[in-house]
Length: 153
Image 1 (cartoon, rainbow, N blue to C red):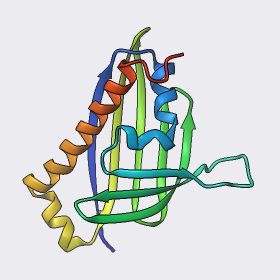
Image 2 (image 1 turned 90 degrees about the horizontal axis):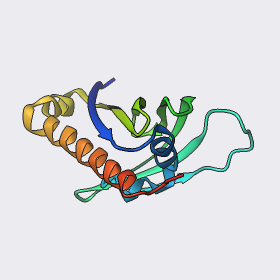
Image 3 (image 1 turned 45 degrees about the vertical axis):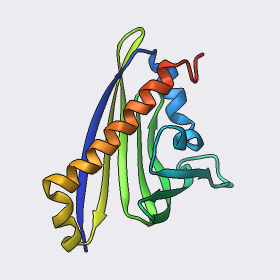
Image 4 (image 1 turned 120 degrees about the vertical axis):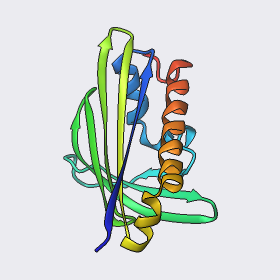
């Protein structure tokens, strides 16, 4: 059994929560703003109920990981929670807080499990900060995409 590590980042986006939600909900477009994500593919599912299933490919620094994820909870324009099934053990959530009519705060929490020996190095300042900084950069890319008018209603 490994150890779970968690990273939390925030962004303040000048756009209505409906637009922010719409852009985030287009999971297959995530490679537009998430640099380590090579692709997200929706897996055809015969049921129309949760969980929504997707296949993710992460490619960074010569490493490539694939895994499937399911959406565990969806509250439109408020929250998405997911977890991996098989492959890279991950889970996370994204929350949308409508502060004003045209202003939304997004809070992203990503968790992943690593072997304890490797997790010890990730907890060190440099490597742990590297992941947090990369997630913040990705969320900043998301903000720029939304504020440029992508997904505008």
